[in-house]
Image 1: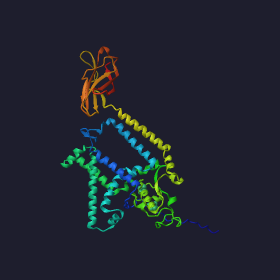
Image 2: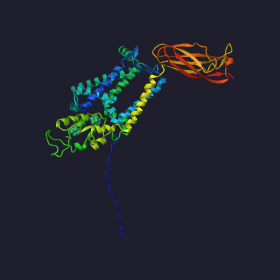
Image 3: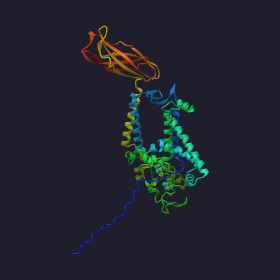
Image 4: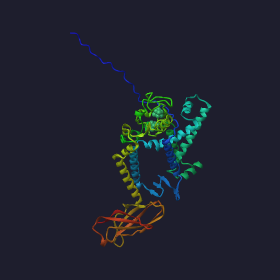
Length: 472
Ligand code: SF4
Ligand code: SF4
């Protein structure tokens, strides 16, 4: 019996998948159009707010100042203390919910239009274009051998970037140290080492992120790019290429009959790739690198206009809308779906709650601490005395007087100073003595009592719990 031959399947050559992608410089081309106008409007808005607000005054002080050393946040008419941490937590929850809501409605709207990375990259690109020229000129300059012209252009660009980055770092630090004092210390070269460190740190971060890393921050470093797909669904507005209309793509003369040539609307001009700040081709479908800036939609609309075709080959639409050929009204009707309504409802409720709580917030706070060194004792006259330490935080910007009262036991009286004064936005510790006549004293042990402090120039009052000890 002849031995059966074993058939060994021929294995395909294993494919080598590089784990590291070599960086290719992206040279985004200048673009004009509807979305680009919005992007620039937001660049102006955010930057005017950032660079301008730091210089606004509120009475005698800076309107917006996060004074970490004094542990006080000044937000226009509001003074917040570490005890007000809840408001910061509320603000973070609101920001997160707003991001969920905007992502569910229109994808990476934040990334494309308002994220500081996008905004600063846009500004740095603008400087680069003014000095080195548009895409083609920049590519040519980078590929050209060393020359005086290249050196001067590159040097000038980096000086402009550096100055802008340092100004950004300086403004950022100006939200934590009064900016006028900071400017004065800079002029007189008396800036403290920490201030110098943070100005340089934030300046360098701006310079590196907006000048060099650019799209790599969005592609590889930003965590939002990784989890935003969890908030997407088929009714989320995203920038999409209408492949049914565009394919088969191909170049053609301007007045050629595309149908007769068997071509779709895409002229394969690649302008949508050339303007893309992340260097991707939107015609390959939804990609996580897309920041939804709409530059490809703007440039493609221009091409469609020149060719005499209908606009919208690349546009903001939903996956459902594109697949089913929905009109704009049909798409927008689907945008208000349950997920969006839930996000919007929760966001509204938390925002209202936070606003209300801020509006009703008492303008002072009180902490009561029992004086451990002085337990209950019997004083001259036979009364029982307990001593407490009260921390009174005056959150107003005026000097205030407070009346101190106590209740909870028969005959309980304040025998220390019944009124105290606290400076504007200051806190003060005061020792308070309470006495109960021995004959009126309740049984020995610990008895709940309340301190009540009233602001004498106003009707604000605070009630705080404590205990009164009576010796057994
Ligand atoms: S810009 Fe429009 S026409 Fe040109 S390649 Fe891109 S999708 Fe096609
Ligand atoms: S694909 Fe279009 S929308 Fe997405 S990042 Fe590139 S230019 Fe912007």
